[in-house]
Image (cartoon, rainbow, N blue to C red):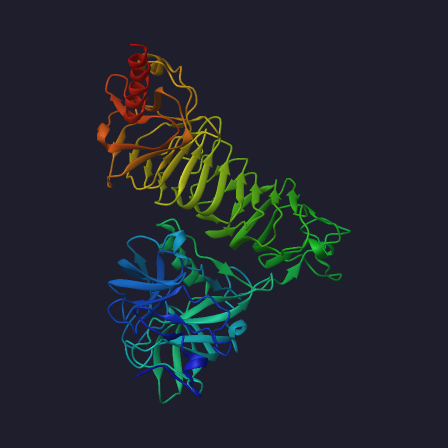
Length: 604
């Protein structure tokens, strides 16, 4: 049976107009109840196309524990069907608790590998309407408009979307669920695990899908659909617990309660700065908005006293160069909503920041600059289309993840967690210490590590490495495992005449140094290509220098985009280094010989 929608029409309620599940075509009708929203984060089982899942991150998705996950999952994003293998499904213990059981119905599925940035999957947020980070506010969700996602009548019929609203919320022990009436939408067998979403208008005025729950059960006598609720503080903490191990933080969105005024008072703890009446208090532990167009020129925010905000939004403006700057001796604690910059101007935080929860930052095109960050044992995941920077110290026992754009670090960092570069680029431009703290550094396929800094982490590279800023040296003080897959980007300058000169360092080129006794070893994969970006001259270059052992052979390396000649690699076991020798093209040498012979014959 299909999910039944009262007054159903294919135009209004089918996600796809045709071709499901192998070659689906999106329903482009303006009358579609889900029109204007990106549904690319809702996937389905490759083996049972009536079974659907909502994605929390490129690697994690919501599952109904009693219905489990799928061996392989498919999504439709950027106009194509993509298939990914499931790795694990783990129970949170929360959700609908069925009779005779103690565990709730919310589980988290994990893919064997994440959907890459090129896959086009949107990053859905969980909708947080609670009055405080540690307080659940079920009344705030009552009457909330929903878009419920469900199955078609068979595996070759499009999945469906129907409008409903919340009419009760239960939060007690492990029970975290809400109900909707079956008057408008009737969930049916096979709908368990499919997402319940809300069309949310973000602080910049755009509309996007947010996650509120996933389907669990029905009661026909009571005329109710039962849906696991993911908007409680306990569930959000559990979701982060599973996701953080893979370097992803739950994206959390909420409606801002206040907008910064700041023209006559720039103190972040003052009610006047927020345009509030006498006897009011400045917003604390809330989502807030900063809008340069309505700030009356008050773009400098004074953080002289410690303050706590759950999430910061920066609205876009028509102008440029009108970003906010935060400064002062106080510590700004940021909650699970993190920072979202919709503006094309940079937002700068010179005051110290403390992470109150694991969180997701989107610097947008304008970017974010932060001085000191205390991770406080939490994961910070950063993305954006522009450049984000940390020019102070990242400390604490938490980790850092880059999921898009560029993150540049220019100081020695001491944080103890792992570092993930899922997508985009991490630039290490520190002059001492370690850019990435003490935990392991993982660079995924499609991502890039660059810069002229120092990294003390043990490093696993499946992506690209581009040492230097122009020509420069990137130094690792620990083991480096190269899993292959992406080109390594090197720039070449003046060549050495001989190998001996190259050993002595007379050539100029990008260089990777693996010091401190670090090994340079080959992991999985079989392709290691240096992209020399149309540079170089005939002669010798040193590319990689290591202290420890290596299991590479010269046949493991290839060269592309040399300006002249042919590249030949030389592994020197004595100096523990990889060298490139650029020799004349064989065809060039033959032609030169012919050109020299012809004049000699004419003289005779």
